Image (cartoon, rainbow, N blue to C red; front, top):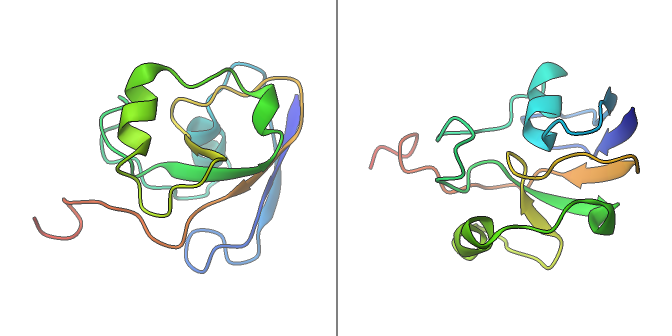
Length: 112
């Protein structure tokens, strides 16, 4: 089991959190299982950017992003070198520190 430290987010996780997740589980599934309501508008099909996270520690332990994820990340709000789509980032043995960005681009929730 890997430990995931979730940094405080104003609405999704105001106090921050420390959770554990098994190897092979996606970061998105681990957050949802822990009750952290990260957006995932495409139901984790790698078709949007609503589950975008910043991996502040442990980034290199994650398997590399595939081309489809890389293409979508280019559209994410607040893209940084340590950005990943949490539905695609599979947890390995190393601990992670995750930051959920302040904003996301969600055409459905924005009424488009």
